[in-house]
Structure formats: structure tokens, C-alpha cells
Length: 407
Image 1 (tube, one colour):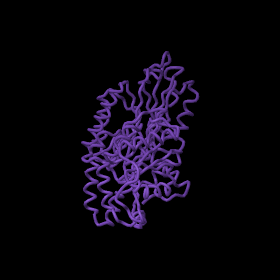
Image 2 (cartoon, one colour):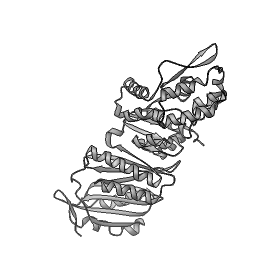
Image 3 (cartoon, rainbow, N blue to C red):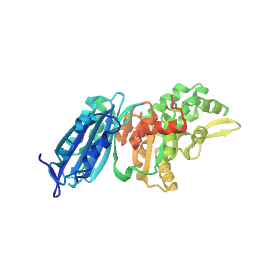
Image 4 (cartoon, rainbow, N blue to C red):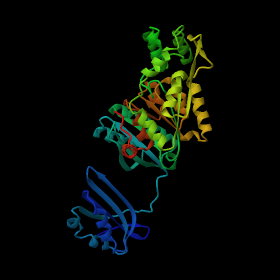
């Protein structure tokens, strides 16, 4: 049997495949124990009860590994193959990335296209793992490349285009230590953390919901100046009793998966913040209910128990949202590359650009085009795989604490 080499050492790659069951890994390494071979690399994965185990070994004597494994196939009920190994000490590609692919459903054609784009950019897929089955199917590709920063920007743009053609979402994020540790996650509120636009809920009590909704839509697409459009919409509330706030707070519905996202990030020690072009009268209690540390939003002027149709203080627009993200990061002693911003409208673009990872959530086209990642399914916890958090980890933690999954 021919072998590869690692420096001056001959190497052999052992691959074990078959139905997974307890004891297979132990049987393999027990058989190898007397060969004098050393373990250079190992990878094991189980998919739908099917095991694939690969071990790269440095041999002390050519042929010793293959001889030691003779008969293991029958004894363990698996298939064992030996082949020439590679150079375990060869040069590494200096840049490591995570490419996360989400789809509902995730079809083979989409995976084929995304991996083809990666290969066309001279990058290599080193490992693939499933991150979630629900609420969407997501897989993560560990990718290594020698590309420059400009090459990586081109890769991200090309992947985004390819994903759009196949109706899936894709995100590219740094690998290695850059992904680990505590982060600050800043979320927009209206149509992101919650399903509604609060200004429209308020306007409904004034009988002007349709009028306000039309202006909101144009502002979120970036067609209108946000500050001017907000003042125009708030003017529709003039004379409305502040008592409607209780009804509005009761009507607010969290986006599906929002509590799971918040609960999971809190478990990991992340700091969360809400930054909204909406109103602190609603955002503040919402943040308190979810245990979110920071909240910034506009304030409505009230005189004699009624809204005046004006705001208090400067408008929380796109520039103010980015400033808030920077201020919260400084308060938490976190660099900007350890921040995440999630939003849906043009008003979120500056904070999405400022964050280490900017995520467009069911966003307008102008936002999807500029964000690092886009999620286009109606579940906020679909963001978790983009942060390297698997659904299995979430479900195991919930089960350990007796937390019921969201409907």
C-alpha cells in the first residue's frame, strides 16, 4: 500500500463508514493501539444514524495500520478503507470564514451554487455542519482562503446574488477567535423585534392608520427623509389621549422566535439593546419585559394627558441609531467588531454598516443589498445560526431549564 507523507513520516488515511452505534470509535482505536501509529488528524460526523469517521495517522511501519484493521469491517459492522494520507503539516490558508446558508426548504441546487461560487473564488470548504432544522434548515461551511479583503468583499457580493437566485439566505462572517466571546446585539423594534409598526397602531386610534402606513412604507424604502416623515406621521396623533398607550402595548406582538433569540443570547452573556425610530413609551416597557439592558427611541410630547403631535428632543434617525450602537458598545467596553445590528428599513442602514455583523431581517431591497447577511424568513431566531449557535444547543438548554419552545 502506498502512503502519503507528513514531513518524513509516511501517513495513511483511515475512513470508517456505516450505521452508527456505540463502540465503533473505540473498536477502531483499540485496533490501532498496537501499531505505533500516531494520530495527526481526526473528524467524525453522524448524519441520520450514518457514521463517517476519518483518521489521518503517521505510520511507524508501512502497512502496519492496514494489517491491524483487517477484519474490523465484519467485527464492527462497518466499512473500513485505507488510502494514502496527505501532509498534515502542510501550509494553511491564512483566512478562515464561516459561510452560513439558510433555506425553507434548502434544496441541493442552492448548495451546489453556493459551493461553486466559493470554489470559483479560490476558497476551500473544509467542513460542513448542520446548524438547524427548524424554523429553517441552515448549514455552516467552514471556508479557508488566501484571498485579500477585496476578494472577500467580492465573494460576499457574489454569494448574495447567487442566494437570491435560489431563494435562500447566505451570510459570510469571520472565523476563529473573532466569532467567540461576548457580543453586543442591537435590534430595531418595529417590524423586527415586533411584527407591527407602533406609529400605525397609534394612528389607528386616531382613524388615520392607512394614511400613516403609506408614509411609513415610503420612509422604510428610503424614498422619504425619515425625520420629516416621522414628524408628519406624529402630527396625525394630535389630540389623542395618552390612555391609548395601554391598548397599543397590549396589541404589540413579538416576532416569532424573538423570545428564543433573546433568551439564548442572555444565556451566552451577550448584551442586548433596542434602538428604534418608534417611541420609548412602548419600547421601554418592552425592553424591561425582555430584560434588555439598553433602549433608545423617540419621545412623544404630552400636554394635559393628550399628544400634541410633536416629539421631544432630537429624532432617532439612521445616524442616531449608529451613534447609539457606538455608545452602547463603549459602555459595555466592547469593540465595534464585536457588535451585531439587526434591522429591516433604510433607517437601520448606518448602524448595520457600523456593526461588526449587520443583518437585514425581512428587509427592504436597499437594506438587503448593503447588509453583511440577510434573513428572509419570519422567525427572528433564524439569526442564531449566523452567530454560530446551533438549534440543538438551544433546545438542549431549554430542556435543561424546563423552558417550553415557542409555538
